[in-house]
Length: 96
Figure 1 (cartoon, rainbow, N blue to C red):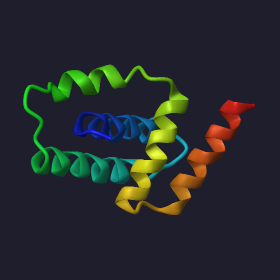
Figure 2: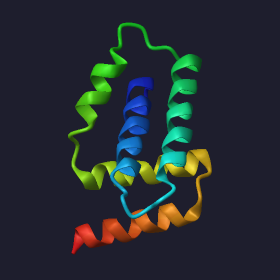
Figure 3: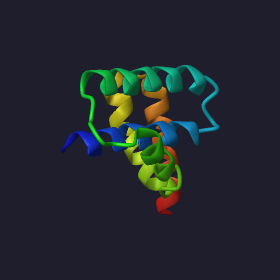
Figure 4: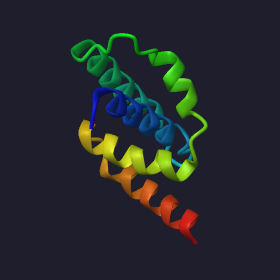
């Protein structure tokens, strides 16, 4: 996976968590993901890549895609298992 795709995965995962209204503590997790993304950008700058423009495009991805990406991101930041379980439940609901 190249740097651009990694950035897209992180941002898509952010939007997936943002869509989880069932989780009251999501604001804290979103801040953790945001910091993780900012650290990624600092550590691996991508020349001629428009971060904000790319992030805006990802907002319109299907909910299922964003939720699947969020599971990978949550694992990376060692987020509470409770949120991952809620996301899995929501994915199961989308499949039915």
